[in-house]
Image (tube, rainbow, N blue to C red; front, side, top):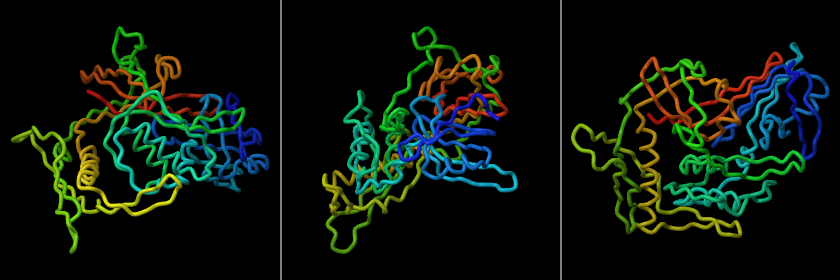
Length: 358
């Protein structure tokens, strides 16, 4: 049993009780996606009544973040419940972003798309944020959670649903990480290192088998009666020549001139891109393909919350320095999630590192 853990359950924005007889909990909030959790506890009558789909769980160890129960498995032989879910940003999966949005600034567009498509969903959307995030993205008939994650990643910021345990209200929140990677600066608090033993299992790989730095993309072919000609574009490192140029063809014929737009009253209508608009949308499509093929260097490692402490020395979204002395390798990484594990009466915290810069 995890004596140090307090897990509060809410039903329909009302506090319903505390989970009892917890065996283990994996609690993983993330910077720019919905995160996830897995709870194992006794199948008591109280727990069975509390832990139902759409119940909200609040863990005071991660202030302002709650998670939504999505699945409950009851094992009669072992008399246990296994409960899985995601953090409450996933509520936005219940709403579709109607129509097509060509986005050049991710933060304000994310808020606008969610606000325009709430249709009664019980979350609050702020009017604005204190930063801008230029991007070139297209959102087309996606659920609002997927759209929010896409824009947050493109804009380099975090997105989550902030939960107020007193009122049980949920508010969409955009956050920015801090750069803690430069020694001697005010934000620097140390580093993760194999010799410091807060970094283990480091495996570094360089692989160019799937690498491309130029995308060649062809758009919608004209049908009989269409007045446009098929548009072709190139995106990427267009200055690259000779052996340094690595091209990849991408078929963009699924990106059509006709698309659906949503009015402020929520109604939708068919529209046709101008040629300039269509070229922008197709270029965004090609850039998305380029992103999937640009990486040639990969680092896999496990970080431990020991000499560097979550909430004190770093937070979600922060960029931190790494040193793998055995390989002569230095890099920085972003803290994209943190995994809190409660088991046998002990709590451990492990940051998840990604988006490495070498």
